[in-house]
Picture: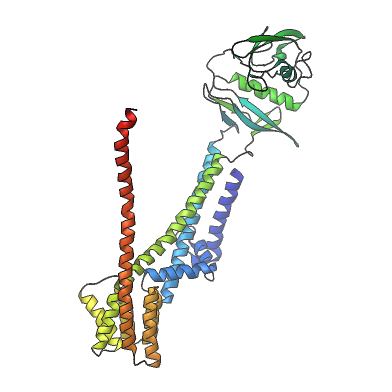
Length: 467
């Protein structure tokens, strides 16, 4: 994980430095400003850029050029913040990895608390090109020595096959014995009694390393079913232990290290033992640092999506507001044109009235943009078409299309079409109001449901208490 984090950090720093040096036109104050603008430039021809541009057009009154500038600003800002957050996360991960190791290159293994179950740690032993896996069992933390009482449940014929473990037979015992707690079916319990616990412990541990010559020890299994019990005895011949290779020698020293530190909460794992490299094997699962990194990347992605989604929410709110004012807008156009005003004069008159009454919102901003364009001499068709596209709603686009077609081809029944549009707009407004009421009633069901649960709890509590 440390190597990956270092490579990622180096790539991010290199990206920032190279982009600032070779793309000076994109320079900015922040570290990743140039890189963000460069990546934004590469996204200009993609579908993502076009969709974001549409959402930004919905969120405010602007022409195509301004919409492109705002889209570039949004994308570059999201990329810049995302890269900076990724760099901070990478530095944090490197710190966590380095903090998990002490200055001597060792690693600490936490022992289970007293009374807990033994923990197994996978280790990799490496000696030159040779590599072996070893599973070290960490016993629970102990404050003093105590005898382990073993209850077993095995039939005699099953014990004959299992107790010798890695030993060839019971006449040449060098390694620990396997003393089951139960029989194969799990119905009987077994208790083990050793005549010499200094050589064979009640848990099957064989202390053959302290022997200078072979010695026999009696081992007894008391088989019980809760009412009856029977005994089965074996004569076990313990021979002096001798390690045959570097793997066995390393395993012995690791076991000895574990036994000597049982009164401590942690065991310091050496970096190597007699030239054999020892490291914790984490291939079987994802390390905590790796999980933190993955979670951090997910948070960064969610944060970037929220930044983009904020623009979409703003555009949706503005569209909803403009749809609410659409019926008023169409009615005002019909009223003004019925009194003899031209389309140009109608738009200016509606704008002046809204300005006089201190109206605000999306419709006022669009009319402000249209009136400024008309007063500066811009083509009416272009101005009306931009309003239809900038609103982002089908209703305004349809209305502006009617007006533009009238200017291009002439249409004697424009007022009649606008009156029909006025009726449709009023009907749509009533439908939207009805839909809002239904949504509000559905939201009220949530507190009603919670109140119902509380009432049921109040009624049932005395009955349950006195049951």
